[in-house]
Amino acid sequence: MKTKTIIQSLAVLLLMLCPMTILASTAVNGKPTSQKSHKVYDIVENMPMFPGGQQQLMTYLINNIVYPPEAVKRKIQGRCTVQFIVERDGSISNIRVNRKVHPLLDAEAIRVVKSMPKWSPGTQKGRAVRVKFNLPVAFRLQ
Image (cartoon, rainbow, N blue to C red):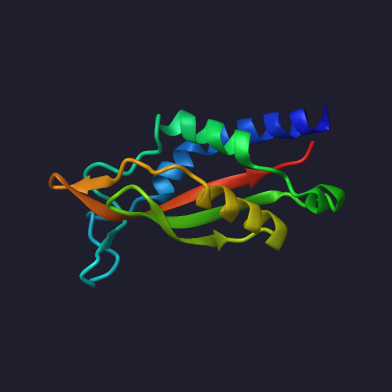
C-alpha cells in the first residue's frame, strides 16, 4: 500500500514537471554546445522524443523507478535533474546528474535513464543530430 502511494505521488510530481522538462532541454538559437566534429545541440528543429511521447516517458519513469529502501527509511526525498545526450541513433549517452539530491536517489535516477529504450533522435535540417536533454526526476514520500 505504501509503495502504491509513493508511485502515485511520483506520477503527480512528474506530470507537474512535464513543462519543465521541455524548458530545461532548450537553449537560444539552436546552436551546438560544442564546436567538435561531434556537435551536441541544446535545441533543434525537432527535439528527441521518448517512444510514445511525453506521457509514455512519465509512465516509464513511474513503472521503473524503485525508491531505494534506505532512502525510504531515512525519509530522503527531492528532485534531481539528469542530463544526457540523445545520440543520432536514439541511444542515450553521457548520463550525469546536474542537480543532485542524495547519492541514493541520484544513482536510481541514473539507473532508470540508462535502462531507457532508444528515443527518436532530434533532427536539424532533416538530419539526425546529437541533442543534450535534461530530465527532472522527482522522489517524494507520503
